[in-house]
Amino acid sequence: MQFQQETLLLKNKNKQYDTPLITGVKNYIERDYLQMHTPGHIKGRGLDDEFTTFFGKNTLGFDLVGIPPLDYLRHPTGIIHEAQKLAAEAFGADYTIFSVQGTSSANVVMIMSICNPGDKIIVPRNVHASIVSGLILSGAVPIFISPEIDPIYGVCHGISLENIKKTLEAHPDVKGVCIINPTYYGVVTDLKAIIDYVHSKGIPVIVDEAQGSHVHFHPDLPISAMEAGADIASSSMHKMGGSFTQTSVINIREGLVNLDRVKENFSLITTTSASYLLMASLDAARKQMAINGEGLLQRAIDLSRVARNSINKIYGLSCLKPEDLSGSSSSFALDETKICINVTNWGVTGREVENILRDDYRIEVELSDVNNILFIVTIGHNECDIEQLIQALRSLASRFEDGSIPIDLERIAKSKGAIRALTLPTLAMTPREAYFSKVEYVDLDEAIGRVAAESVLVTPPGIPVLLPGEVITKDITDYLNYCIDLGLSVQSSNGLHAIKVIDDK
Image 1 (tube, rainbow, N blue to C red):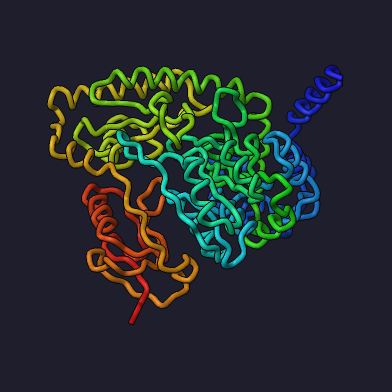
Image 2 (tube, one colour):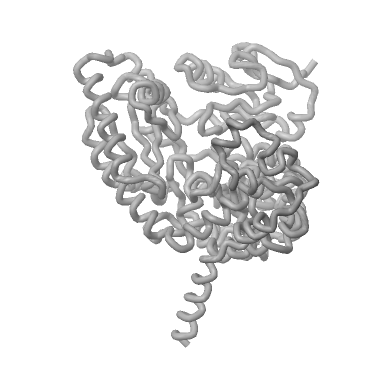
C-alpha cells in the first residue's frame, strides 16, 4: 500500500514538469500561420523598431489571442484547462482558475460567489480595496471586525478566533467569512482553527492570500489557505510565485461553494482577450514552485534570516521577528520572507527612507508607511542582493548617527503617538448603496459627520482608511491630515483634501 502511494506521489510530481500552455502555444507558433486576426501588430511587424528590438521576436510572437487551438480563458477545455489542472494539483485545490487581472479581480469573484445582495459577510477592517469592490458589486452587507494593531510597528495584524466567535454569535445569519492571510507585512492568524470553527457552522471561508502564493511550497512557511481548508483563496503568483505582474490564481475547494457559480462570476468580469504571455508565466511559475519551490524558498528564508539578524544590529532599526508575535491572540506566525523595518528612531517616516534608498542607493522597497519600510526576499534574490541591502542600511544609519542627516526628536514622538487603532466607523449604509447614491464633494475638514461615498486609501498597501457608507469622524480626518502632512500617498477621487460624500440635501 505504501509503495502504491509513493508511486502515485512520484507520478503526480512528474506531471508537474509539464507546461501544457507554454508547449501548446510554442507548437502553434512554430507552424507559422498567417494571422488575419488580432492583435494588430502581427508578431511585432506593426510595432516600432525600437520596441521590437528590445522585446524580441519570441516575446512578440507569443502575444496571441484566444482561438480554438489555443483555448479560451473564460471557458477553457484545452491547453489552459490542462495548465489549470496542474496548478490545482500543485496548490492542493479541487479547481484552479488563472487570473490575468490580478488578485483584485479574483477578490471580487470570491465575494460574488458566496454572497447575494443583502447577505452578510464578516470582513476584517484592513481588507484590500478590491474586497470593497466585491462588496459594492455583490451588494453584500459587511460586518467589519477590527484587526490587532502592533504597538511597536503600528501595522495591522490578524483577526483572532475569539473575535470571529463573538461576531458569529452576534450575526448567526452571515453567509461567509473573509480572512486576510498573510497580511501585507507577513503576519498570519491561526487560519486552520478559524476555518474549522466557521465550517462547524456550515459557513464558507474565503481567504485573500495575495501575499502568500509561496507559502504552500515550503514546510517552514505558514500554512496555506488550501491546506487550512479554505473554500476559495486568491493568490498573487506575481508577488512571490515568480509569474508576471498582473497574474494570480483562484483556488477552489468544492462543497460549501458552488464551482459553477465561481466560474460564471469569473467569466462575468474577466477579459475576453486574455494575454498568453501572462498565462504562460503562470504555467512556468507553477512548474517552478512545484518542482523547485522548496529549495528556492529555503534559500529565500535563509537570506531573510541573515538580513533580519544583521539589520537588527544596525543603529536605530528594528525588524519584526517571529518571536515578537508571541502572546498575541490574533497573530499566529510570521512569513519570514517579509522584512518589516521600523525606522522611527531615525526621526523620519518610512516614506522618507524609501526616497533616500531610491535616490542615494538605487534600492527600491516593497512599501513604506508612517513608521516602517518593507522588503521582500524572493526566489529571485541571492547573497549579493542581501549584502547590498545591508551595506546600504548601514551606510544610511551612519549618516543619522553622525548627524549628517539630523534626527527629528519631535517627529519620533509624533510617529510613536500615532500608533493606535482608529475607532471602527459606523456603517450608515452598505458600500453598494453609498456608491450609487447622489453625492457631492466637500473639503476633508468639513466632512466630519457626513457619510462617505468612496474609499479613501493610504497606499501602499491599499487598505482603505474610509469606506463607502461609513460615517466620517474627526479621528479619521485627523489621521488623513497626518498622513498628508508626512507626504504619504492618500488617494481619493478628487484629490487629497476633498472627499466624496452622500448628498443629504
